[in-house]
Length: 274
Image 1 (cartoon, rainbow, N blue to C red):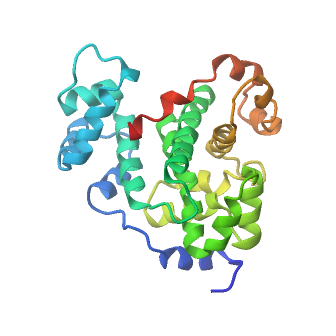
Image 2 (cartoon, rainbow, N blue to C red):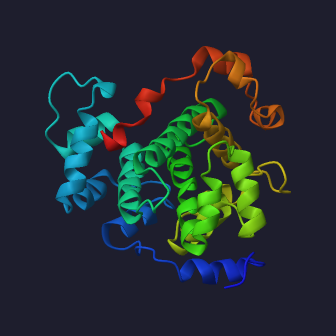
């Protein structure tokens, strides 16, 4: 295969040839519900109940100290009531996705997945502030960096170069475009298209590395962009927040001063793996 990949059609063919777990069964049905305006709670509960591991995970999330349940949660109905249908669905899909990907040689699995969870957490917080769908933002941001793992299948040397110490997120995106032809968000957008995720998520993934360069602006892409930058920061404080791109913040009506006062703790972002 000749690199860089030149067209979207070539990217689609390349992604189709990668070692990807098909989105089928319960996972496919969950993804299908993302495109629906409303989802029946009974349908979701019965779908989750078909998978003992997923059921156990949902109950574990509901019993997390983060949600402060007054008593032990033992049923899916109670768990969904506490967590919310949209959050359960997003995290259930994410659980299937995380199980579909293995971190290759050169990637610290724990660090990588923590980064994904941190991106999702910041995206959820930013989406609430921007008036967007918080669960969709969480799932989109959580998935974005998985495109880097697909790039590793296309050209492992590019993955290793992107993971070298000192390579910033912006530099990683540019390196991917230079060597592969597409950045990880664009690659994951194609994966998501082939997995039949909603067009809004595919569009946000496609644009998230450069959210202001497209004629049709995607607020969700801007949220994911900022969330990934926040997740990359060693410490998120008043000084580091000033490094965020002001034009992207302005596009969402966000101000650094407000963010500094309300930024959540990262420790609250990792319940998926707890």
